Image 1 (cartoon, rainbow, N blue to C red):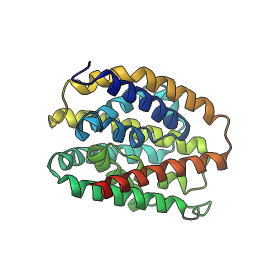
Image 2: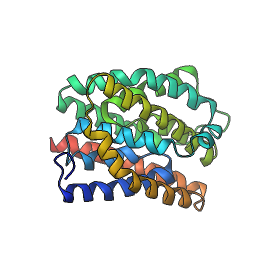
Image 3: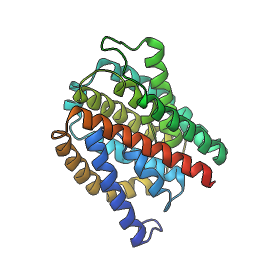
Image 4: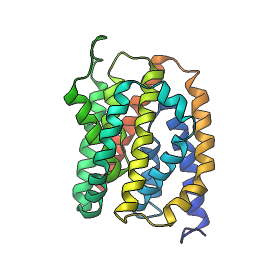
Length: 248
């Protein structure tokens, strides 16, 4: 056993890590969205968020130079703002009422899914300072609060007429930054313990394999299919958040 976890719990976590990492490799996001709820069945929610951030940091280091080089400049701005806002999210996670937290997460996830369903913006659309800044700040808060930086970021890139490679690399760059901020903030605010990095190390081989398989699949799917898949992943996260809210 690891930190009180049974072999069955670790096996479930490994399977979840493999599947979530495949989604991350294909879509460019979604690992924490899918992994945190499953880990939350075995460990407290705050620990599940920290483990997801550790895994995001570890897998983000794989091919980081290539990802950053393929990213849009906006990804660096959003990343910087998200890093600044992440400690606020960690603090809210520590003090917020669980019922209110579930409600806020569900509303944000559902709102982001609705945004993705809206028609694409014009080909010449360039996000303004307010849109870019709000995306970064909200992504940071959600990183610390729920381990879910994706809901604000995905519509920002997916609704624009840009190549999938650019959108995917930009999102991965942001999520690398938010993982660093999430881990650092949790440690600084003493929300983290020694068990989270140990569990992350156990799960990392499955994450590495799943991400590699997802990356292979990304090179074989069409633009329309990729966009449909990313929208589906965001929709699943919205339904999961709503289910947790109704079940509370």
